[in-house]
Image (cartoon, rainbow, N blue to C red; front, side, top):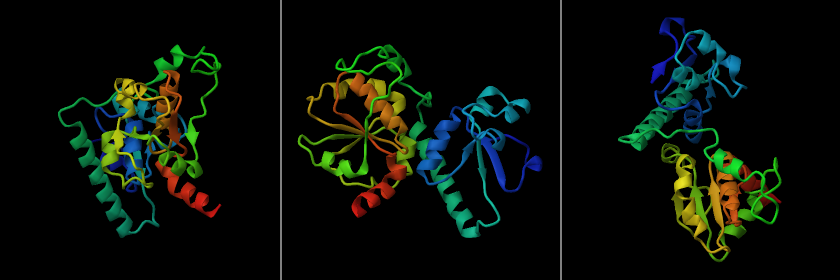
Length: 249
């Protein structure tokens, strides 16, 4: 971990740091999986999908400003919350080291399937694609997930989060008769052919923390020809609330 400002110039409630070789988006996903809410860059650029101009003006190298994460707390946060946060941060570090030990860090492109998407933009309905500029509706809502999981043949359930995210997350919040497969999105192009070989009627359900990465995976699989591909709508972050609302409906 590299701190992005000298300790003597830091606010006592705010830390800004980077981890060599790991992008800020990857760190945000890891902390989010552990239930920690942090931000990328600086407060001045929290809403922008680019490195902080503040950190760039400080003369930080590109990798450091692009990988920056900001963590802060306030006067209302008691010692118990701080102790718990420290324990979770430590668990994040251990998960990251364990998952990447002896291996290169994943590239973490914002959309690792972008080239595949671009190659099929002009596809027409009925040919495994949609008109240019349209997104495939691959999200499956909470009130339909249980039915999909009980369908025959049993669905293939795939976790597309990185391994270090999976290590700090609680058990899957819904029961599935299938074994959950791990296929991080950063490496998913290598395993897509496995699911293309499945019978057409076999559902493939992808999930991640927010539903963004799993939707990318489901759209890619559909474009390649397996139309029974789905993404957990809202991801793990919204699943408990969605499941409760479904039960109350």
